[in-house]
Image 1: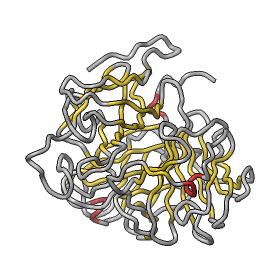
Image 2: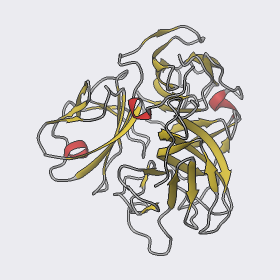
Image 3: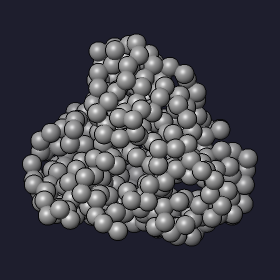
Image 4: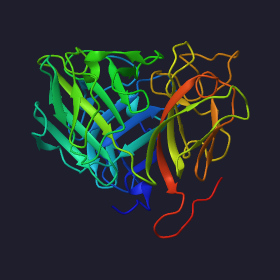
Length: 353
């Protein structure tokens, strides 16, 4: 399969300003299927929407809340973006927002019978991203993901009732899981993934009340690595301001990093090159597990601990801050999406900032 030469055809960050009424956000470059919104100026919910669950159906990455339907949030997936109602979490007047947008297959999904549980899947095999909806059985099971290649990372949320966000990552293996809404370390859990690695057609779940609760609906976001577009890896920090360099094979547009050990300041740190246009990419960090405003650690400032920062380079990223969230001497996992491939099949090289 050919390398992706224009990553922004599949993932894009779009900034906008709320107007307190209704508005359509354009300039995404495609019709998004997964839209993740955050008010940058205030402590508010992360607002996650997708085309499989449908408009108005929100989830919050920073808590365990069940799915909520509010008609005045995301009201439509458009051909070049999305439309919003007057809900303050997505469209507060004069406030600055970020949207992170992923392309699946521009549908509400289709039936997939590859696993023992029939799922509804919207998948993009080119970019390695799929949205998977299914109903749990409470017993060991497999679920079709539609990617045609093996997922490197899976994020699962129970929708119909409250529950954690469980994360599978290839770097920690099938016997452990991470939790998106907390700072918790990777934890051994045989029931989360049934101690079984995903395949090119299915991922496995055990008798888990989080990934496979009987009778509960779940949503899964599945990612396979694609050369020049996405990378899901790990690194060991060196505890220095001249930090670890992490090779991705492309110039990152978006990176999320998690320290695998527990602690108060070991959050899921999100960086992108749209909110911060120069190196060091610091001071504008958002945290998937925190409602805090941009650049504020936790739900308030912490003057004793430095805000995490990284350099976005032509072929990866480099930690530039001695910080528990990105570069102490622990082990870290990350997910990254490209701004440009290092060298595309069109022979156009990426350049450093």
